[in-house]
Image (cartoon, one colour):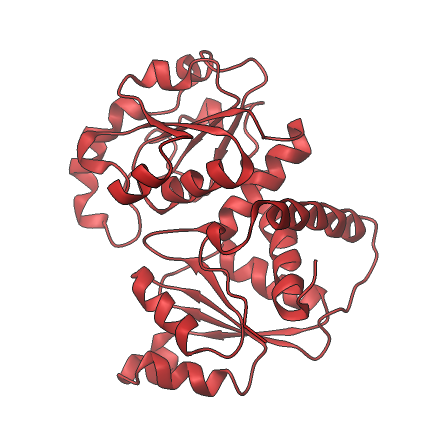
Length: 303
């Protein structure tokens, strides 16, 4: 049987993604009501982290524990990967010992190498190109708060980074329109822009980009590995800050989301992220539930 991986949102079809979100909502309700679930009893998840993490690590580790399974944290400093062992050799060994592998790394090509060599499902915990698990949580959060996102409009402000590119994939998979406002030098992958042209628009005017939208999303201006560019990026991204005046241009019921960590006073003001339209804490918490649904789907091969 072909092994199913989750490297981007395009690895599942639209209906399956919708079912996954609904299953996550069900799992969340069960958890909040105190029900226990041990569908992954005896199963093991290997978690390989080349990038630091809070939400990704805790949500996957807690998720496996809540489903009766176990998660193992692995870093390059503690494994032979840090001493030059080829990715393929490591993965072939792990495939004989664990039921699933989650990888959080820099180059997306390295993640693809993990998947190509694996005989068990591989999950993208974040690469420089995509962050699909975060998008599952974002979609769950919007659906819980406002219902279907199909036919809605989302505004992305700031860097055309891995989160932006994941929103581009989400737009075509979940059926919404995406306005991207970013500096010319920080646009997303031009190939992806061409592929998503029917649902994604680059809008140079920030106010126009957020006008009447149903969801406003941003991210830090300097991601992991870009700290040396922080001063330059701060200057170039300042016009894209999400503040009260900008949120006032969105629909009155619009939500604000941010994958965190956030820098108040930079990409978003405190009055927005800590205000009534902000759903960032629900969004962060939903990482746990949607990843439990994903783990069940990939390991048990059913939603």
